[in-house]
Image 1 (cartoon, rainbow, N blue to C red):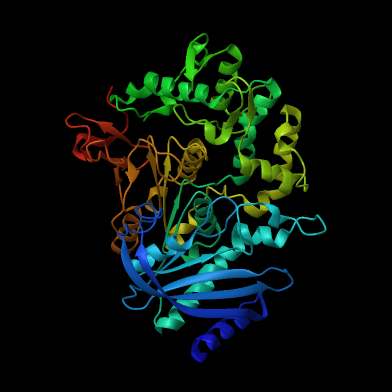
Image 2: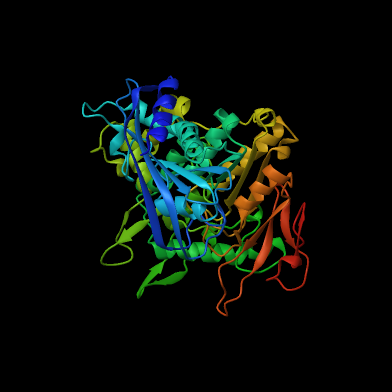
Length: 512
């Protein structure tokens, strides 16, 4: 590292009150060449689409700590060697991982962006980092994961980029999905003054409700001692799509209007399906648990705690099961992240068996998780009028067939934002993506170049009323394209070739 850049690091660290002195415990600079830049999962929805290519860039790693927190955070910054476009992009993580993989950072570099990611002081999918050796919760690391290291990434990362180029950053962005979407909303709610634009897709907002609601399917199966094989769940998904596909006026294998779908789970009782060579009859017990998956968690008096999965969604992400011997000898797999949430964050005991949580314990854990952690990680502030003062633009989409994060939670959040400020679309725009799964995938049309739409809104004042989207290639290699519409408008089929975007119009309701 050259002495001027090192001096910039140290001067910045000393000026930052929350960082210990010396804040920079170690730093390294290397020049990296990526021989084959493959298409990244962050393309299109997050950063501009990237062809396979060779790129060279400067990779800077900064390791720092917060005073008295006993943490060690690694910040990765990738800088184009030439052609920096003056933009800085902070990127988000997934699950309990604070930051993205290197390919996600490198995709932005190809287009001239300075990109940054942070590990938040821990690595890996496991929740083991949250407990200290004494068995007590490591609150500083949790705060790092929830918000603090994210803010640091922007402040410190921009300082590094500006020192490297001897130029001031023109625009600052956030790009992320899932946990990265939650992080983007956290930045919008607490630190919007740091950003010009934030892309926060399929967001894991309402984090505490999400973790407990994700456990609901396994609690239902455990409490009722009814564990359907995944082939039964698949049969229900397919039957629901068949029944509700045409509610939007077009039969295309996608439920675009899940709110209108009133599928009776008991209508399949008595039917026999082929489960890999074993005939399985759908029972009343199977119908009941599937009905509960769709309804979502609620108290015995019917009071809703949170949302369930949308009709036509793959159940196995949250309600996975494993069968041995016969298709009727099945055990619960469930959602591993929620199980770890209960064991590590609530019981503070890695050995706790979250697979044996029934209704009574579940209700208690629901209350506990809200009381313990809302103040740290909750992102439910629907008064976003401060975005007007900071001139920050926020965008998000959510797939309506998301099997991991309940899209109705995001829809409800946006509705509440509009209730606070009917003109919130001036600074926050949300788009539904029918048939799209978690951050992408599924039969629906995937958003394309969404990050570019955000850039145009920020830098050119072109507020997107719709987002272009494409399906995965059909058997003949062609794509289906259609617009995703600014909520609450829907992409209605108006006639013509259903594979062409020109056959759809954004309007208040579907054509039936």
